[in-house]
Each structure stands twice: as C-alpha cells, then as structure tokens.
Length: 421
Image (cartoon, rainbow, N blue to C red; front, side, top):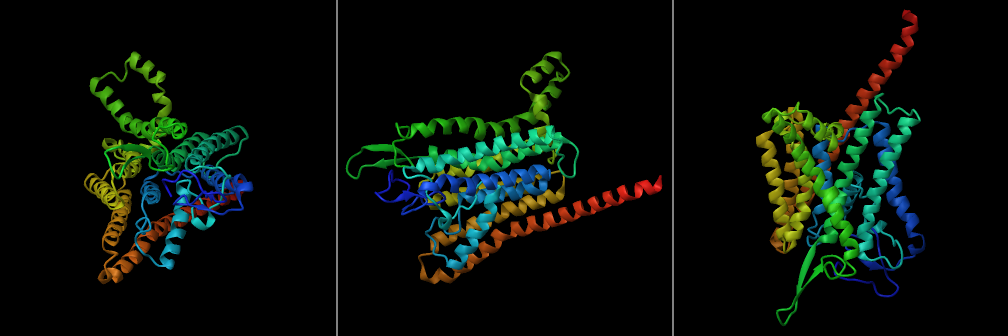
C-alpha cells in the first residue's frame, strides 16, 4: 500500500505495480536486467525511430493526441479500483494503456508484467527510477544526433540535420515531460495524519510512509524539487514568455537596439528560436503562447491530486480542467489550420466524457438499479479510449502512403534523368 514503508520478510516491492504491492518474487537477482529490457530498450527503439525517420511530434496533428495519451496516467475508468468492471473491459483497458504508454515512457506498465528490481527497493526507489529512464532518453537523443551529424547518417525525407536535432529535442520534452511531472508529484505530494484521540497531526509523504522532508524522504525530495523547477516549471514558463518577448520589444521599438541584441545573445534567445518555433509554429501569431499552455495542461492534473481530499473530488477537479481546456479551444481556435482545431477539441471532449462517465460510475456503482447503466458506460468509455488510436493509425497510414509515393517518384526521376541528358 502507499503508506507502507517496508515489505514483510520474504516479500518484495514490484516495479510496474500500480498499488506498490509486496509479493513473492524470484526476479530480484536479475531485476536490473529486466529493467533494461522493459525500459531502456524500448526507449532506445522509440527515439531511434523518431530521429531516423525525422518524425515531428509538435505538429498540430499530434499535439492533442499526445496530450490525450499522457493524460490517461492520471485517471482510469475503474475509479482507482472502486468501480467493478468485467475482466474483458479490464483487459481492453490494459491493452489500450499499453499502447498509449509508449508516448509517456510508461512501457509494459501492468501488474502481470511487474517484477522485483532489487530486494531492498523502497517505494521511493520504484518511483524515482523514472528519472533515470528520462535522463537516459536525453543522453540517447544527444548521442544519436551526434552520430547522425558526424557519421553522415542522413535522416529519412530530409537532408537537414538541424531539423532532426530540433525534432529530437522537442520529442524528448514532449514524451518525458509527463513522466517528469508525474514522478515529481508522486514524491512531493504530502498528506496529513491525525491522531484518533487528540489534536496532534503529522505531515507524511503520500507515498512511502515517511515524514515529509524527513531524513528518508529528503534524499528523494531534493532532486524532485530540482526537477520541478528546471524541467516541470521552466519549459511552460519559457514557452509562455517567449512570444511576449518580441511583442514587447516591437511595441517599445527596441528590437533593433544593440544592447537588446547583445542581451538576447547572452540569454540564448536566438539559439532557442528553432525549438520555440517547433512548439509554437502551428499556432496563430497572436496565440503562440498556447505552446506553453499545452505543458500547463499536463501539469494541472497532478496539482489537482495534491489539493483534493478524495478520489471523487479529484475526478471532479480534473473534469473541470478538461472542460476548461475544451471551452478555451472552442472559443479561441488557436491553430492556423482549422483541422488541427477540430482534432484537439475532439480529444479534449473525449477526455471530458470519459472522466465524466467515471464520476457517474463512481457515484452510482453501489446502487443495484444502476448496475446495467454503469456497465454500459464502461463500454462507451472503451470505445472512446480507442478512438484516438484509430485516428493516429489512419493519420500515419496516410502519411506513410504519401512518403512512399514521394520516394517512388524520386527513384523514378533518378532513373529517367540519365535518359534525358
């Protein structure tokens, strides 16, 4: 359980166990090898494919889908196990989340695939190892870009290394941001325990059963605070402020000032421009700050978890967040392309409906008269969970077909060129 500090003798914490359960295990002696196979190998394959094929995850067609996939980490249709669902629905949900897990560094996250990392691993060890996975992803991106640039390995569909570098960095931030945020809040979420008799209370870490910022917790809390400031809060802040920077300078008519030019070089504004444009380029000029809002959207659900006092309250709070996201995008239409606005509005509406049905099922599942309705709702949720997968499959089939046609034409042109000379 979340408040337990240690397992009883002979039982060990399982990595990928949602409830941090203690069970018998024979994998402790080679848990690190299993971690490499279950985490680092998929990360390597994922980022290698993204860089080699020069896939851009910051496009308007992908933004909403990625946000949908990464939001599923914060709620599920079982209401944290309170809602009774059939084994078929459970299996369909697990498979769906397995697919979505590849877009948030959450590979093979299922109870049946859980394993012991090492015998004395604590809950904080199980949580914090995701930092290592994300750090490995960043190292891998840098290494792959270096290899491709200096070993003359050109990415497909483009001859521009700079584009591949930018796409690699933005892919890292988009995929790893949700995991950095979730891991940080798992470590830094507090809870207050009160004595049954008396007014004494103590603040504990929600997970791990340790005193909040006590000698056991602080070892993990300090790195989590560093990640919170540098990787969780800084990216959305920069993306929100960056578009305003040039607007303010233009308004004050100081954009051509020598002092401002030198100041911009000192703060690397010019070097950040390709990355910022990658996040913000698909939005209208007046709404480029929406690149930062999309990161804030990922930040809000764990914040709601911290301030809520129960799962029902938490589900209601994130429902408010999802509806607010939907209303903002319906009214503002921030993308330059109308189709991108439609896609994202559909994704946000999907999240709101799925979570809304969870709130209904959570509230009425104990009533026998509502059993059939609750069961029907869970099947509706399954359909809604799979719809974005259908969209992204169709999108990439069309994309790959277009790439194949271009490649065939290029080969045909190469073949006919000597004949035309």
